Image (cartoon, rainbow, N blue to C red):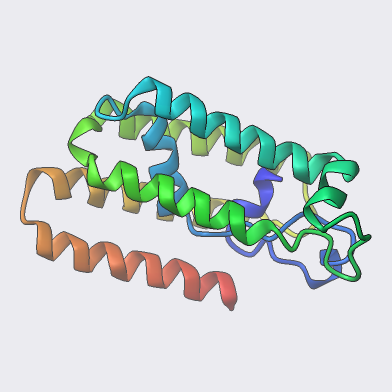
Amino acid sequence: LLSKCFIGSFNGEQLENGFPVIFIGSLTLSLVLGYFLNKRICVKEKIASASMLIIFYLSFSVSTLNLIWHGFDYPVCFPYRNAFIVNFFLITLAYKCFVHLEGIRLKHYITIIGIWSLLGGVIWWKNYGYLSEKKIILTLFFVFLGCLCLYIYTLKSKKAFLLLEMLIVYSELLINGW
């Protein structure tokens, strides 16, 4: 499932039997990781959010739960129509982290890049047919750029770095859709 978070992971052949479409960009997912590392967000909220993510994961993994999401009717063609709810929830968590960005320190950004790198290594090792080494490295490059910009954003001029961050996000989304 996490392999679908990398650039170029969309595969039209997998729509009927594959993983859900959860690509929302590496910056957003990096901020979701930052959400759980952020000192400014209370532990109860993090536990509730983690619980929801586990429920969503189980809904994608257990066919009975997926059937419940589809109103007890077997889905035709696209088995994970509820993936947009997960995307929205992840974007909401990323926004909460961004609002409290001052709670993220350099060590947290290094941790986020490390988690992404570890995930990239595992995905490369598993050798998914739809992900090449180049796509994995490109995603990790965008993670590094995004985290660097967010870190500098907390230290320096905010407007200039927001524009740069926006350019990075648009570039990643454009490359993913190519």
